[in-house]
Image 1 (cartoon, rainbow, N blue to C red):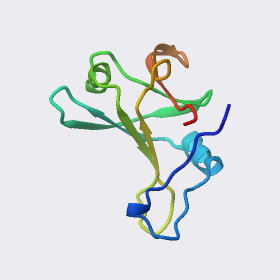
Image 2: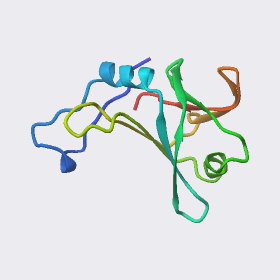
Image 3: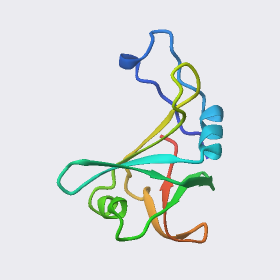
Image 4: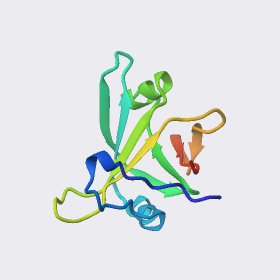
Length: 126
């Protein structure tokens, strides 16, 4: 599998800034304990919630009940932002995963990692 491409938006960065490589980004995803999942409600308002997730088989896995707001939102609008990192100004690395599923690639709903109702957010190369 090709490695995902890490990018930095030059409009919001120092002109000399470079994107963090996939190896370090991958390490952050593997070791993070908490992620923030941003979804969109049916009325267009954002919904942000912390989720405990794990990186396994090159995908982020998290669990939610079908009746929880994030699950309801994902059924209506599959676009998500998943973030993790730290709350320190001077150090650390924050990772933002911006995912818009493409045909044949996206979310798998079912028993993932033996967690009932888990969602699998696939991160294929771009």
